[in-house]
Image (tube, rainbow, N blue to C red; front, side, top):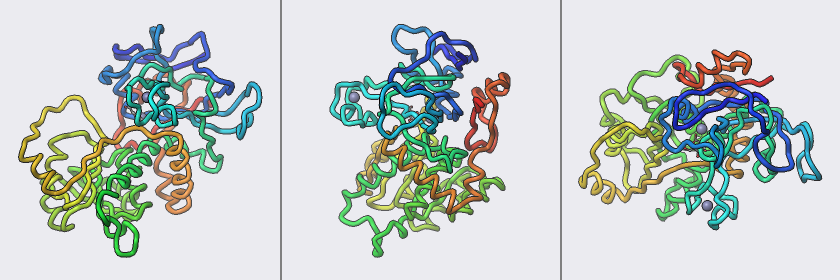
Length: 366
Ligand code: BGC
Ligand code: ZN
Ligand code: ZN
């Protein structure tokens, strides 16, 4: 059976035959397509320090963004039929802590969770895999073209849920019409995550400003202006933004760069929230007690955001369906490239390098 295999911590990936069908459970899934994200590339390029093969194995099947078709079901499984399109949830619980036991390994307390295609569990870049229906999310066929985005979007659904929960600390953070329409969010970075979080925050009613150290490309203009977001060129810092907006209520960082986050921080208004989503492994920057004091005096909340679970996958699919109806031109631009699994060189190339203007690249197995 064909699979895309890595051997962490060594860099490199190969398309090869594996002997056993990975996974366990009564549902046999045939893969239709995979998405590629920055984490896959970090694993392939040997820079994702957490990557490891399942216990006792010397290779790891890559891939945590996947859509497949149910090919066989052993016994009876409620709500799932042969022929259904499904998406597997990528993080699986430690089996011990309470949060994992109630289906929320995104809040695992032991740290002994596994993540498909990354940490101790085979991923889904493989012709077939077995799974438990508990981890499979049904995908509506009407949005099959963009549904692969539901995995990265699940992380962001969870992020917004968490940010709003955190902001319930403020007696009132909604506006005088009960919405978030008067709240301004700045999204740092305009890549795949920056794009999806912009659409999501717009859906929640925020004013959204996307920041990057340059002017937008024509495609970025179509996407961001198409959903009613604004653009801010941050090449000269964030002072201008603070002046123009009178301060922002939410900073959502997708870059993981301390210097960038620090430079935008003075623009945060009192009672605001800083959501940290992106991370990078290389940068060294200073965080001082003056920075801490600023956080305190602003009454700021800082929240680390990682991993969405099954309820977030379900919400993500609903939002993708809504976006297809609300912003069809934008939705049609989110998948920037499809490569076929038989095109070996192209597959290995997109696994290593990000292409300019990329939002989501898919590997098609059909
Ligand atoms: C995935 C998350 C996952 C994280 C771990 C991301 O690429 O989308 O679900 O928890 O990697 O680093
Ligand atoms: Zn990912
Ligand atoms: Zn746990």
